[in-house]
Length: 387
Image 1 (cartoon, rainbow, N blue to C red):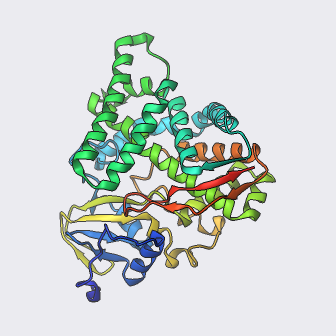
Image 2: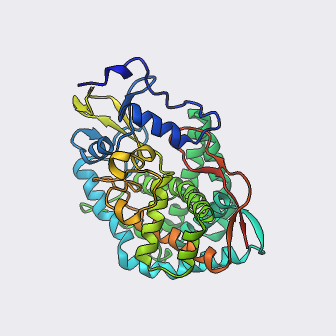
């Protein structure tokens, strides 16, 4: 039966948290109902089972939601599958192994710049690392660092403002950076640098090259969204390690890559900064007892779904092995994040290097949560002391 008691209390996606941890707000909303109607129309999914259904059933829920071109995220069906077949090899295991020493040098140089003991903002540290690591992976020049960091700050502010003119202007700035870099490579022809950006220009999808807008959209997806996400992930992970000295000691004692990656995934499940994605119902359907009409926008709140007691028991209990298979940090279904191997590599390397160069990561002062509701999560600032 539909959840009639929620018909007069729709979820406000811009609800002020009044100093509360947004995760508590989401937990309470999920406890009232796993799927809630939203102020202004559409639905928000808080429950794990409903999130899995929406993300897995691309025949019912389309990713073509934005009015802007989004490749591959905003594609469905055969075209989406074809583009993923073309770009997923960029993240294959062998390539990540080859990349790891380069990313490790980036992390080592960054941490070496910190005169210990030092007070640092883990989010700011993560942002700078994300820019340098992504530039190293894509073959972008190091002198883009300050421009990209400034763009990240402006993009964050524009997103929080919910002013579509500001967000559009920031997006255009980023596209201009990408267009400049790809134009240089196209002009160089066979003399273009042998890097991932050049490789992407030469990718064929079903025998045809990607269009310039498609290349720009893919690179925007690889970088524009991931830079901010990686900064938020670094803030969450380093703060959690500081808050849990026994876990910090365990990591310092040496763990395998597989165990270390599982630990990072579990920290991100408990405090998931990849907060929300949109889908649009392509047909009339039902979800958790609600009738969803074709055309309705459905927001999947990954943070809430990853804390659902129905899937994880105590959502704050640290249990990497037990929770691994149900963890939705990188999504699920045909649109699962293609860049997961790269993100995992970067986070692993950053944490390893910070631990190697320090004897203690300690809590400094009160951290500040991201104050806006979806799509941002994690911390605005995460002050730590590195000794």
